Amino acid sequence: MQDSTFIGLDVHKATISVAVAEGVRGGEVRHLGTIPHRADHIRKLVEKLGAGGHKLHFCYEAGPCGYGLHRQLVELGQDCIVVAPSLIPVKTGDRVKTDRRDAVMLAKMHRAGELTAVWVPDAAHEAMRDLVRARATAMRVTGKARQHLQGFLLRHGRIYPGKKGWTVAYRRWLTTVRFGHRAQQIVFQDYVDAVAEAEARVARLTGQITELLPDWDLAPVVEAIQAMRGVAFVVAVTVVAEVGDFHRFDNPRQLMAYLGLTPSEHSSGATVRRGGITKAGSGLARRALIEGAWSYRMQPRVSRKLHDRLAAVPSCVRDIAWKGQLRMCQRYRRLVMAGKPKVVVTTAIAREMVGFIWAIARAVSPVPDPTVSQSA
Image 1 (cartoon, one colour):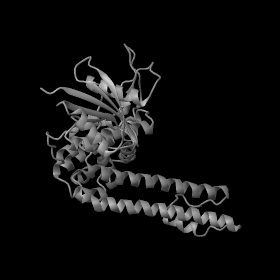
Image 2 (cartoon, rainbow, N blue to C red):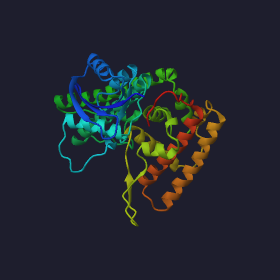
Image 3 (cartoon, rainbow, N blue to C red):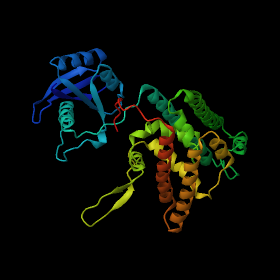
Image 4 (cartoon, rainbow, N blue to C red):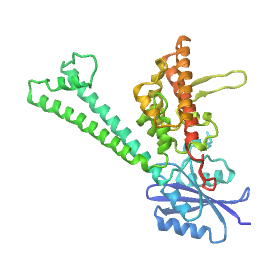
């Protein structure tokens, strides 16, 4: 039987700090040193540590360096997990943090089985997720550009007489705005151009997502969950890109917790205290779901747009979506009548939406190969 060796890696842009823990309980834990963060040095490290026939188990924290190191180690035939930093046990009295101590801590905790691994997407999924996140960034830039323009207009007393901004009528009104000083007119036009450029970037990225979606293996899931009310194309592709494989969640409660939509709790003995949602996981997916949940404040119905989306999905998916709509519209009204704030109500509805999305995704997506390792 091969001896196991657990290796903790504290990964940075240019260097990697390496620590090793022997597989037996109470075995030696030592710091090997620091190596350059380059593929050839990593390969040499694997060859050196595995020379005695040891079974190697690598781990490192998820961070800005991404999953390239994980993929290289897996290609070299090694076991590797990427650790969730927020779930690493921390000693409250320990106030010294160095690369050496972090690597040693990772090696010891990996040997003890105290680390929680994150799910590592394949290269194709990560590429689609990057594209979706780029669109979300462009949306934030567009919002900021609009705020700058409206703030400039407000400072100079240019108030739109209509009810709603950024409509066709609002944009026509912008073409009539004039300033007495040339410099102010230049600033105004620059703000208008910035908004137009940001909106064009969003439209361009949305079109690229639409174009690339058919080649994605999770495209059937994106199409199916659009049967839900409040889950149009952008919300659907955002949720699927952020969640990935729905089969790694045994029940919808796990997915709700993963997306940070479950209430926080601090209870002890007979005292039970629950607070706001945990806000764990992807904030992008959580915001998209909460925005979609606002649609359940209306009576249950199938709109023209929803009817067109339903035409492309199986009957079992339509049944789940309609059942969810009936339940969530009723629950929305009941919670509002109970005096709950609308923000709290909408968050609760978003949490229930996750359960029905989980059911639909599991119904249409294939069960992954159990021989392929995917961490929860």
